[in-house]
Image (spheres, rainbow, N blue to C red):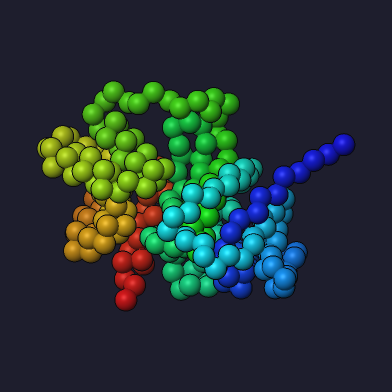
Length: 237
């Protein structure tokens, strides 16, 4: 006997929700407007269902769903491309929004996707057999980068992340080129969320100007891709 769980989430409009998931490559499997609005979508083995509720408040949403994949990089690029085609950009703040793709400290490579109604999809691929949280680094720079990423990406506390990064960048602590780029991009990410536009432009310009040795460049691919998305978000009218 086999079982399968399919979550059902609230949305303000099944029309708007369908447009969003269609851009991500989902197919529509159920569409009902009366007596109760209901939508079901599927992409591969991922199935989500939604019910219409006009009083739903996206800003107060605590709805989440974790999705595992065997190829998170390909899925991330597919979602980025679909959102860019549908919206003209990759949304980096507000709703909907797409986070950076990162290697997490608990053996998972993942990204976060929030839909127009505040449903957060956490999408990850195990990259280690050990999925326990690694100890917080003791070295000052590594610790600051770890905590800033954790606070900004996982907890959405962009002000706290900004404070940590401002202390690091203003401390005079020697940073490698890769560490400096990573810190600047993380701080630029916080600046976009906090709508600190002049500060964002300065951070982005500084990050682009860092002379990164060729051997270190591949390790910054995720960061530089995120910076490109942030620059597009900052250019919004």
